[in-house]
Length: 158
Image (cartoon, one colour):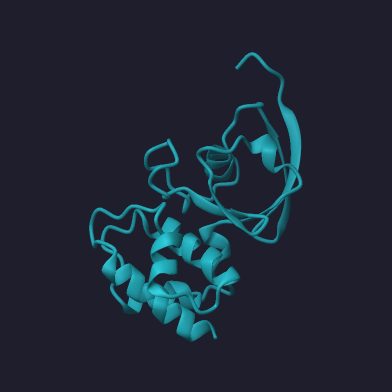
């Protein structure tokens, strides 16, 4: 790449991590290739589909657009960090119960967008759910079942 690697430190799913990255290494590539957290998907590589969504310092971001060096010192949550103790998180359980998945490719990003929404708004209305998930695309199930899963998760997490 022509540049020297830079050492960054970050917290990923509650674990302190270090990595040496080239200046333009994407956060998505760091997560998938270096840390082997492959639940975060690359869909479009342009920040349009939401498949690569993760939470950085409490905010939802598209990891395909973020250089890894920008998250030096950050707290990152990926889909692998949503569930604890090998049990499904209530959000994941709601998606399962409401049949809000089909191929599953978009699901990690949808779950991350839902988690980010419910961290900030415990009782979102339909319009708020639609807005929060507007950066995520699903080509299999459509969004109706997904919105219902978010509503169910919000009721569960009260």
